[in-house]
Length: 237
Image (cartoon, rainbow, N blue to C red):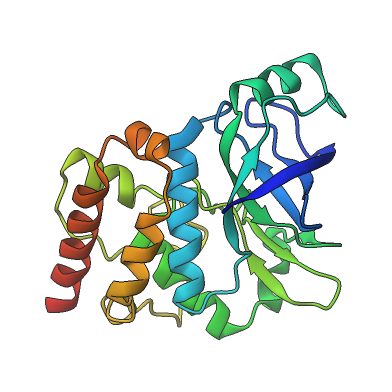
C-alpha cells in the first residue's frame, strides 16, 4: 500500500507544478509532485520510471514512491492556487525522497563532480533522452555530506517517444545537455542498457497507477513490450 500524505510542510517553488515538502503518516519526507498540476500524470509516470531505472543502473538519485494524497487533507500552507492543485490531485501522486540540506550545483561547480558520476549520468540521460539538464540548470545537488545527487527526471523523452510508436534508437545526448561537447568522456549507452534487469523493469511498470498510464497513452502491457523491445534493440547493436 502507498504511504499517505499527512502534513505539507512547505511549497518549494511557485509556478504550475508546485513541488512541496510533505511528511507521510509513516514519518517519511518527500518532495511531492502533483498529478493535477504542471504536466500532470504523464510527467509523473515518466519521472517515476526514469528515477527507478537511473537508480537501478547505479546513478545516485533520490528514491521515487507513489504516495496517496487524501481528498480531505486540510489546507496547511501555500496559496489558493496551490490548494486548488491539491484538490485536483487527490489520489496517487509522486513522492521523491527529500534530500536534506541540499544545494543546487551551478555550471562553475562542474569540476568537482567525480568522473564516474559524470560518465554514468551522461549514459543514463542519453538512454532516457533527458532534455532538462542544461548548463543553466544542471539538476544536480550536493548534500551536507558532500554527496552528489541527480534530480528531476520528468522531462525524459524516451517514454513519450515509445508512446508515439517511435522506434529509432538514440545513443546520443540531447543537443541542449550540458555534457554535449565535453572532451575526454564517453557514454556507453548500449552497455548500460544491458544492465536493465527484465524483472526489475516489469515490477516498476506494474507499480504505475492506471490513471498515469492513461495520460501517458499506453496500456501497461504495451509500455512493457515497447520498452523491453527498445532495450533489446540497443543491446543488439
